[in-house]
Length: 144
Image (cartoon, rainbow, N blue to C red; front, side, top):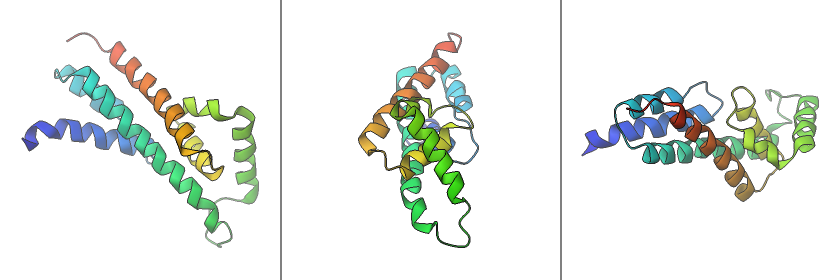
């Protein structure tokens, strides 16, 4: 039974990790499982949910981040936080639809936490954007 779950668990793990600030990509795992004949809709759901949950971790870390801004080891300068905040506020909540983008997506979710974006809106927008991204990946795969 557990042998049947490993492919799904590997996708869940890779999708979660790739949404954090750690460099990783889940699209290759998804594509590999698709070519092996696993059901696309189930893979899409797992990838979308766990990638969104990884972004929720970033959001949570962002919420906690400012608690440490007065510590000597804190890595961000107040001007950097101010700049990121003003950029996010300039584009607003719809910018969370782009949380799937490489390089800017993960920091965007962290900044959303710093700015205390409501979790419901965060999950809806980020989850939608990530779901569309995975749907496109699946749609671009050749039929097996």
